[in-house]
Image 1 (cartoon, rainbow, N blue to C red):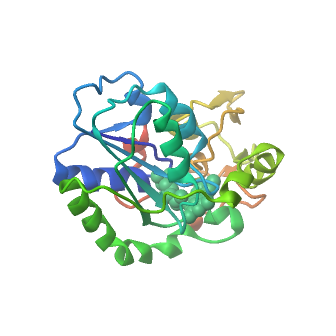
Image 2 (cartoon, helix red, strand yellow; image 1 turned 60 degrees about the horizontal axis):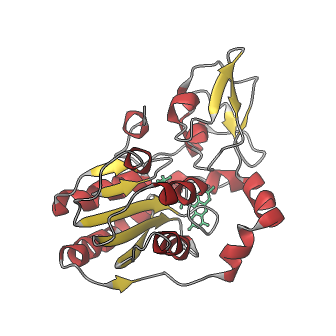
Length: 252
Ligand SMILES: Cc1cc2nc3c(=O)[nH]c(=O)nc-3n(C[C@H](O)[C@H](O)[C@H](O)COP(=O)(O)O)c2cc1C
């Protein structure tokens, strides 16, 4: 069984690509809260790096999922470049439940936060070709039940950027904001938000304080009405994994 978290489809696409040759089922980490995982022989976790760490949602969900302690457990992380503390954090959370991570690796894909910094994630599509071989390596390693931890060390910078007041400052740079002049209350962001953190009021979207920074609302808004990094959202800069559509990411 492979459990995923994904804002814009990169991690879901990788989860599916790994699951298929291994004959594993893919479910979201939210669905895993109520799933019976006790009979599973192999458990995978696939999710992105946000701010040099695992996403806030992943850090909140893992302690609430009941994992089998004797399953072969692996973690695959998607990232623009580096995973920093993402594996370290998740290993620590799983260890508290008596679960050891047997294998982990990363795959580089387009950086979905790039538009917050004035760059176009779609310009990074070259990474799909360059890192396609990594997927095959991971599948072969998992099929062989390999025990190997890549990119699992502690990174002090990753820790610092996610602690206390510094975290608040960094997260603010990638916190989505609704441009009410552009918002027509179409409900797309409400549906795509995995955290159920967006509501419509007076026909405008309102983002609550439980954002995990996945930027699904920014990338999927058909009117470019959700902005990030104090920049207008350009249609050309909106990104989702080419094989993953909006409907694939809807959890409800
Ligand atoms: C708010 C935010 C922060 C990110 N921080 C990092 C980072 O620290 N390092 C990195 O390599 N990629 C970073 N990324 C890029 C994502 O890890 C990458 O694009 C990922 O594949 C997105 O997965 P998803 O489409 O499944 O949500 C960040 C993306 C977002 C939205």
